[in-house]
Amino acid sequence: MKHELGKQLLLLLACGLLAACATDGITPRPRLPTDAEIEQYNAVAPHEEKIVCRMEKELGSRFKRRVCYRQGYLDSMEKQGQAVVDAMRADGLLDNPLH
Image (cartoon, rainbow, N blue to C red; front, side, top):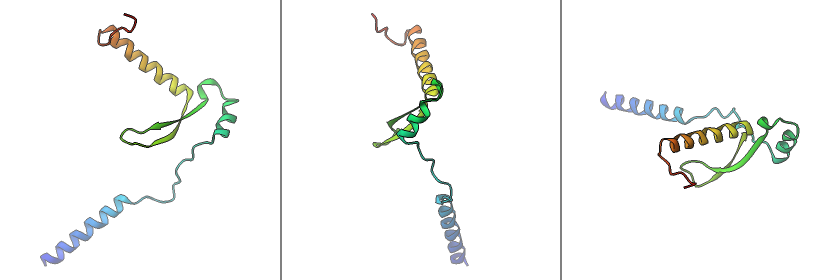
């Protein structure tokens, strides 16, 4: 009886692990636009909506992959980063590069 319960528990655990690893296989991965498509789109898009693609290393990986962002997002991230640096300088946490 204990042996049967152990087998059932092992089978249940194996099924759970397989289910956790499964993908639906139906949902396609989003396709990044080609350089020609981006160029065509950027020709008519406003500055904030233009698409910028570049190769980036993902944290914890040795491999670069192509990522694309809207220019408005990149501009806002740059402003946020500069605001953090300015606040750290004002608090004396960073050396002033001009001195």
